[in-house]
Image (cartoon, helix red, strand yellow):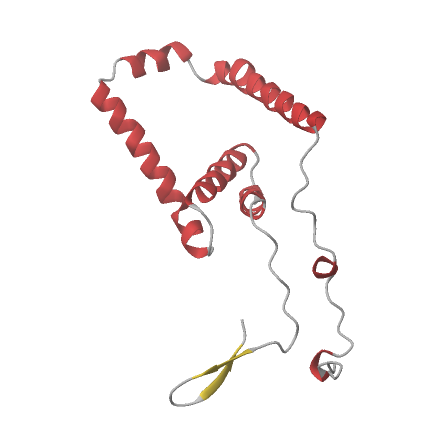
Length: 161
């Protein structure tokens, strides 16, 4: 006959966060209408930027002439240096956030840089956080007092994470 588990006195009366009680559905997919709306919005933004704004600032013919004057080797070096710069800029984020993939780190960095170049302020931080958090499951909340016990050769110690 099993005895019922006694509640931990250290956590008595502590409510679990709502996210821990009701996990968000990870398998839900956006509707076709939502996908179509997003695609149309992206196309609209691209048109505004590349047809409306950039031609006022950038001479497309000059860019085309400059790129066409490069040799194949020079173009390959330019592309390689650009890729190295993308990865180097994303390296601190990738290193400091455990489990973050290189593609997600680079994408978050590029999105954050794009946003902050158009909307000043701490918008890059929010953009970076959204990009990183969108691909990760929320952390499992820990209960107060739930420390793991580790034994050492010399002494026994408790470590909380």
